[in-house]
Image (cartoon, rainbow, N blue to C red; front, side):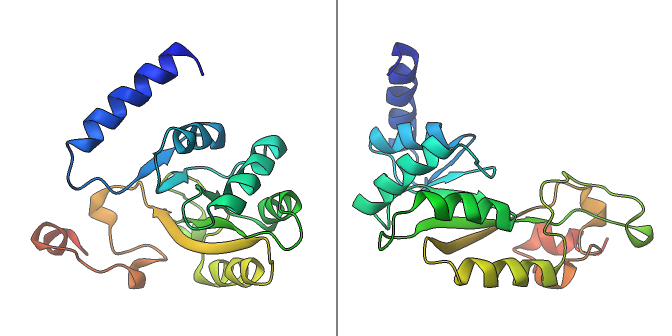
Length: 178
C-alpha cells in the first residue's frame, strides 16, 4: 500500500465516521474497491463494468470469504457476465453484480441522444434479458440496478424509463413532467 493510499483511507474513514447517513462507496475501479475492502470498508460498488481478470479472480476470493460483504461490480452485457463467471471456481459463492441501465433521453425515435451513454441496456426488454442471463449463471448474483439519467431536469419523466420513476418529494413532484 502506498503512503498516499494509507493517508486517504484514514481521512476517508474519519470523514465517514462523522456522517450518520453514510451507506457505502461507489468506486471507480475494482482494485480501488478491493483496497478499501481490505481497509475495513463495506457496502462497496464498482461504478463501471470491470474486465481485468486478475482483479476479478481476487474478488472471487474475497467473495468466498465474505459472500454478503464483498464488493459488487457493475455489469451491462453477457460478455461481462462471462468474464466474471470464469473467475468464480465451481461451487464458490457468486460474485454480487449490479445491472447498469442507460436511461438517457432518446427523442426522435433514438436519432438524438441526451445523457451519459453508459450502457447498452436501454429498454426494459433488454434489462429483463440481462436479468435472465444473470439468474441462469451460478457465479453471479444480482443485488442491484443502477440507472443514471444525466439529462436536463426539464426532460425528466419523458424518457423510455419514465413509467418506472416516481417523485420522491416536493422538489421532484414539481419537476416531473415539467
